[in-house]
Length: 304
Image (cartoon, rainbow, N blue to C red):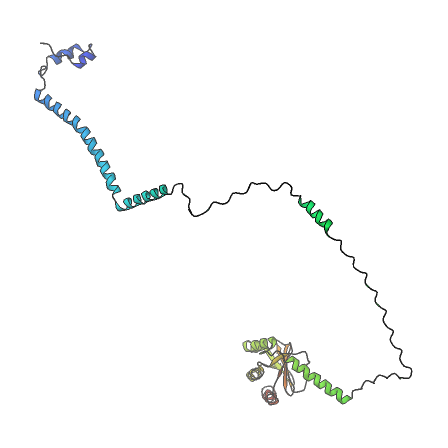
């Protein structure tokens, strides 16, 4: 009995003869698989072939079940229901007007106007031809010439003008004093706490007293604590009473105090019976006579 023909023999008849002889004399050359094994293999193949469609249909049924489960979720179901309601309402109102009670707008009349209507220009011309012409205004009458004034009677004498009065010297002095008082009254229209220049002098003396000197009846003297205290007393007595003025301050002996900064004249204080003056930027402060006397008495003690 010869060995079965192998696929290799059919595909390659020119195979090595030695190898072919060796395979034919092999111990298992006549061996064949048992019939039970072949039957088991066939059963498994048929079972697998029949199980594939069932598995495919089961998988398809699983996907549909998952889709229905997803649609059954409350949020998805509520959204789907809203969409369905909106669709139904839209279909119900399809081709329906928004306001059923609204009436359609009347169509514009296409009827042409009367053909025999005259043009506007012709009508205006006819009206102007019918209107009467305006009456002419009468010429204004010429005014009558004014009557001549009556001639003065030759018997009546003309009155001579009265001579102007000549003021006496006493009246002139009184008028000058009244004018001076008026000037002081006008200067007191806007009171201030202190003038800007006097405020700067006080601030500089407090900050740098060594740079200041004072002079009253002789040579300039260095700034002393007594003079600083008197300046503070003077400022307290005059604060809020200063008023801008254009009048010249009096220059009476013993009633003038000059202040120097670094040897240069900076400010001057003057007194009369009821006033105090500060220069530059001339200001005047009205004071009681007793206050002026007390300030001058204390000044004698601070600056003899």
